[in-house]
Length: 104
Image (cartoon, rainbow, N blue to C red; front, side, top):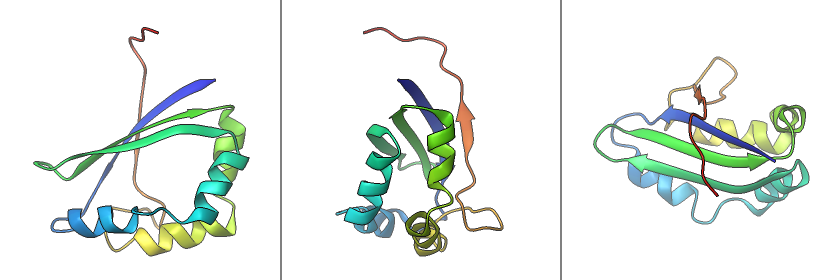
């Protein structure tokens, strides 16, 4: 199991809508995540900066990367693109974080 963490950024004024769109998360997106070995996935919001901290446990980087190619993920990115800073393909701009400490 690999612990993965990354940062994303919301556009100003989009916090409430971002939360609304995740409650509930599309069941088909949740299924895709699980099918690709993702578990224990959480996203935290720093309300003072619009920054999102995401944490997921994944089985492999390859399977994680494959999610981006699914039709469901592509639709989700498009659905969320008006709320977040995104790349040209509508994927969220993100910064991967390196783990420097962990305790079980």
